[in-house]
Structure formats: structure tokens, C-alpha cells
Amino acid sequence: MKAAVLIRFGNAQNAFELRELPELPCKPDEVRINVATFGLNFADVVARLGQYKDCPPLPAVIGYEAVGQVLETGALVTHVKPGQRVLAFTRFGGYATQIVTDARAVVPLPDFIPDAEATALATQYCTAYFSACMAINLWPGDHVLIQAAAGGVGIALTQIAKNAGCTVYGTAGSDAKLETIRKNGVDVPINYNTQNFAGVIEKTAPNGKIDVIFDSIGGQSVRQGMKLLNAGGRMVCFGAADMSGVGKLQVALKALQFGFYHPVQFMLRSASLTGVSMLRIAEDKPNILQHCLQEVVQKAAEGQFKPKVHGVYPIHQLWQAHETLQHRGTIGKVAIQW
Ligand SMILES: NC(=O)c1ccc[n+]([C@@H]2O[C@H](COP(=O)([O-])OP(=O)(O)OC[C@H]3O[C@@H](n4cnc5c(N)ncnc54)[C@H](OP(=O)(O)O)[C@@H]3O)[C@@H](O)[C@H]2O)c1
Image (cartoon, rainbow, N blue to C red):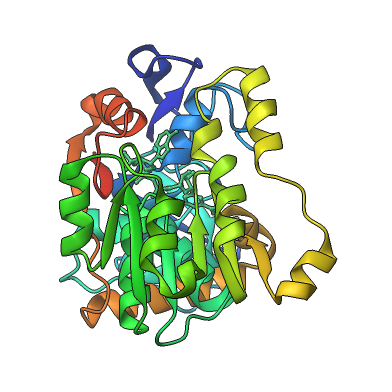
């Protein structure tokens, strides 16, 4: 099989090499898939920059998701069959023509969902679904702030919050992105490069407070957000984009900027702060991952979820795709075709 192997940290142009690798064994509870398309995630950029502590040692095949056809199933696998088109979540290994993954990370995929849209469902929509429907609840009438609402997870969270009857405040970094998030359902788009998001919410939201915040930025954004939470408020942290691509000292400073919290503060305000890592869920709670995958594919098939695709790149343009993702040039999913 072929793989785009991460051979050195740093610039995308020199980071990957196409290599022939031996096939992996398929255990009784696993599925081997012939990959047509795989997805990129922001975490891949962080891994390529050498800042992702879970990344395997180099040379490594990274990548969290793929769409393809089942080649082989282990003896214990019953819900998918050879020849079937599937979507799979992978714990790394996704940048390859073949993947082998836990059967609970694989779901059948209806033919009418295109490959690139499907790749958005695995990591981005499952993270959004777990964050908004399992880690917490959203109630009709809730006022919800989604940071980085033009990112893949932000787009998914917006659709979930609007379907739940919430009023959505969304941040993004350019006017073009604001237009996209407005079309995706954001009621109050905020350009966080030109406006102070906390100031806008204080002026616009009832009592100047918000019920739910989804934060993937980290640092000060979390500390400012905590001050905006209503009684009964929920903050879900699932990323720290602000800590990517900076030196160790800045990482340490930004870590301090999150703020320090005591349980009594949460009790007195009836507030909560929750963290989400879909990779941890996939590793330690694969049945929950299977549930999320089934739900997001079902909701995409019904038209409730509409993944947005930024672009589909051929494999030899992997590095350009990585650069665009790193420099905030994407709106929605970036997929790579073999
Ligand atoms: N915990 C989990 O399981 C999990 C799963 C998936 C993703 N994530 C995390 O969630 C975040 C969003 O993921 P995604 O897939 O939606 O990513 P994405 O589609 O690449 O969107 C990320 C967006 O974040 C914004 N951003 C804000 N600060 C940034 C910074 N310092 N550097 C780069 N971008 C910055 C940019 O939009 P603007 O130009 O509008 O600022 C960028 O386009 C990432 O941090 C990712 O690692 C976590």
C-alpha cells in the first residue's frame, strides 16, 4: 500500500513523502478499507509542526478519517461487509491507500453522500455531535456562542444549535467568513479581528450573558467566555488553536491565560466547564464513537446536517492543502483524493 508519510516536522512542502509500506494485519475486531478519499484536520497541522504530543514518532502516517470500500473484515465483525462503501475514523494512519481500524470506528455510507462531505462527518461532525448532544444539552431558546464558526467543527455546531432552536453568535476572522457563517445560520456574526466578541455579546444578548459557549481557540478566549456565562451556563472546550505554531514560552503564557477555576465558583453560578477529545473517546469509548458516527451519517442522509467542503485536492497537492489549512484559508472540509 501507499502512504503519505510524515518524515519531518516543519514546512508542509518538505514534510511528507509518498512511500510504499507493508500491509497491516486485520485483527478479528477490525476492518481493512481501500481508501478513495481522506480528510485533513487542524490537528494534522499541529502534528506536522511537531506540537501534537499524541502524534506517533516519525516517520509516521497521520490522519483521522477516510472514505472507501471494505476489503476485509475480521471474524467478529458483522455490521459491514467486503465491497461496502464506508466512512471510517482512524487513530492516525489515514493518509494511506489502505487503512485497518476498529470495526466500531466504521459505518456504512449511503451512495448519495459524496466522499469529501463524508470525511467531514467523521472527526468534525462527530466532535460537534458529542460536544453539543452528549457532553451537554442544548435547549430551545438558549443563546449559544460558537468560536471559529467558519471552521469545520464550527459549521457543524451551528447546524446542531439552529436545529435545537438556539440563537447563535459566531466568530470568524474575515468578512468572507462572516458571510458564510451567516448563510449557515449564525444569527449574530462577529469578526473577532475587528470586534471584541465579549463586548458584542454584552450589548446584544439578554442580560449581556450567554448560555453555552463552544471554544476551540483557548487561552484568553476561554477566560473572557467564562465571565459571559449565564446561570446554568455551559462552556465546552475542544481545541486550543491559539497555542499552535508558537514557541514554548508563548504556549506556557497562553496556558496561563485560560484562567484558574475553583469548583465552588461553578456551584455558585450553576455553571460547568467541559473538555472534549474525540481521539480519547475513540480510544477508550469506541461504542460512543460508533453511536456518534451512526447519528451524524443518519442526519446527513436526512439533510439535517449539510457539511461544507472547502476543496478536494489530489494527493500530490497534499502540502498545498496543509498550508492553506494552517494559514486559515479554508472554510469547511479539506479532503485529499488518491
Ligand atoms: N477535541 C477534539 O476532539 C477536536 C476534534 C476536531 C477539532 N478539534 C480542534 O478544533 C479546532 C477547530 O477544528 P476544525 O476542524 O473546525 O478546524 P478548521 O476547519 O481548520 O478551522 C479552524 C479555524 O480556527 C480559526 N482560528 C482561530 N485561531 C486560530 C489560530 N491561532 N490558528 C489557526 N486558526 C485559528 C480559523 O478561522 P478564522 O480565520 O475565522 O479565525 C481557522 O480557519 C482546532 O483547534 C482543532 O484542533 C478538536
